[in-house]
Image (cartoon, rainbow, N blue to C red; front, side, top):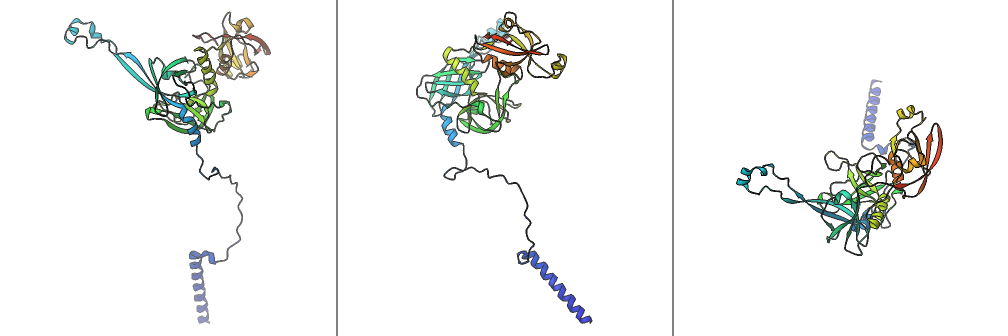
Length: 385
């Protein structure tokens, strides 16, 4: 009996050992349990390929737009401040006039976009501000002297002209169709290294309140923009111009992914007027605007923060003649709702002087509409819009 038990125990031990070895080294030899399906949500493949099975690329967009993006070199004469010791006769006796005012030249760099085959180039006003010599370098290396056709400091835009024909002009896109998350490309000459393309997305739209320009309606992007990119092109994935790169927010002076571009719709309006007349004419009604905070809404018993508060009306202005009063709340301009002072300002300045519009107002818990004939915005503007 003992021998029988011993034989059984040895046989069981050997079988377990064999099972352990097989389960470790060759688990596929063992009969498995039927697989239980796991339900998952699988997104479709994001890999996009063309007819030749090539990976997605923005090279076609760049090839279409890049020839129209130029580098702009400017210089201006500056004078070194007069040495205060020049008024001392003893100092002049020993050192002569070597410390007299000495003219020097300051150089700067920017970018621009050819918007007409006839030689018109769109750029930022601050790129060419006070310059007495401007040179435009085309993408093929050719350099041409340029002159300023007109500039608009309130939007920081300027138009240049070079004496050339049949230049590669960019295609204007539709900034109104942009959505947050759309891919955009910035093209320019950052830090003078040569034409450079960077990629990002539209981070935000209708950015205002940055105090960069008088009129703000920026496209925000994380495409890298650095010094020298100003005035360059922001294009969409098809190669059409959607904005003019203008500014960045940065503590270091380099790109940290917060850049701003002027929408092409604004740039087109300004450009057409600068080419036609050399200046920009804007609408004006003569009201001082204030954002409605929850505290103001409660104080004036408005019930909501919709619209903008009229804080002041200039005597004799179009708004004054129409009957607009301080304390009124503007809800809409010609049927277009007003969100804040910047949005109303942008609506008003886009109107032609002489045009009659209707302001929808809230006054004394009621609503009314007043017809207003738009005036011409003064060149040097007060806080009244």
